[in-house]
Length: 247
Length: 262
Image (cartoon, rainbow over all chains, first blue to last red):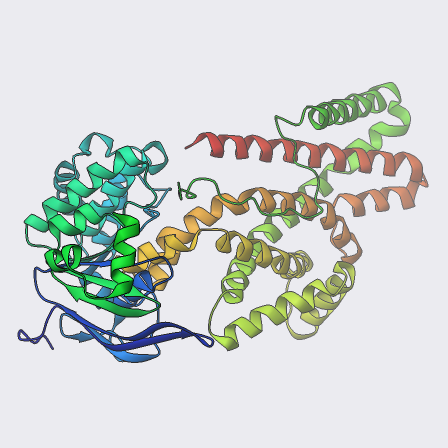
């Protein structure tokens, strides 16, 4: 059941354990339609884990997560339906190496969305134009640079017309000169009103694009607020320390 | 760079015939000497010593055909068994996983010759099927267990991110396996499957004890009539050698083509 009054993504009291190690401790936040939320924090702080929990690539031990009114944590929910609506972009791109760039974009459209090959290809070419890589449509991913691969990966997730996209450190595996081209695509998406949750170390991007910054450490949300607040006057010592090291 | 998509981890190969590689110059030369040497030797025996050998070369070709039939039938069926059991081995369903693991463990623990006798006579006791088909099923059942391990390793060698990417696009596990994982795994398992094929070609000689007239059995039939044991088994060995060397080269060429493909 879709409930218009509920936020797009609702994370409520989520905890996760690896044995006795607590990876996530009582995490709660919401992302409303069209909002851009950036999650930052030191490595091992649980930011990727919570992101991956949203489309159920990780299971959670306590709490609940709902996406577009669908309860992700309930065993009754068809998890494929949730994943159809939420795109994901990975640090390591994860393009399908045995398929061309075009086929990477059309595969899920035809298999999951049941679009005709022709429709899927039209949509795919449109998106490749959008991420500015249309000339590589027939190439295999191995022939592309990291930045190009990541742009294709973003287009692949857009091809499913997701309501929101999760970015898991999308620029961390890239050479410095390629980070800009990927961030530009992400900024365009943000301007178009896409709902985005981004785990990143790109503070410039967080500051410029995000509506809200969530700072995590040791599996907890330490600080949450607007980028102006977070980058100029963070309240917590841990956040101050982190910023002083990274900026 | 975290880009580990294109270079799959090669998986360890077993004890089949060595598949020659282009880079492996020593082995390539050895292959050439053995292959052309045995062909020349065959020609010499057939035409240089026709009174002793010509009759053998005329008597055994029927058996070569049967050997091929058994090998091809068994490898195709073994791939089917192996794929099913291999998928079972990585299943999270405990019953399926347990059954597949049991199959692999039991079969790999019993000598092939014993299994051949067992399955052949066990099958013969309950249903009436042709001897050759029964031999093929017995061979395939055994090789399927080894093949299962190849498929399991091949599937597990595909980076985890591939499955995650497919799932996050809304594909079901089955769709992801079919569209994304297996096509990639196929490329990884092809060399070890080629090895199994050559091993199977050689092991197919075991079916000669099951009233199947393969190459070895034809040789035995000829030898027991003429008492020319030495001459007969020389020819039999040479023919097996030529066949395995030919196929190992063919597989290495196929593999090269496949690697050039991307």
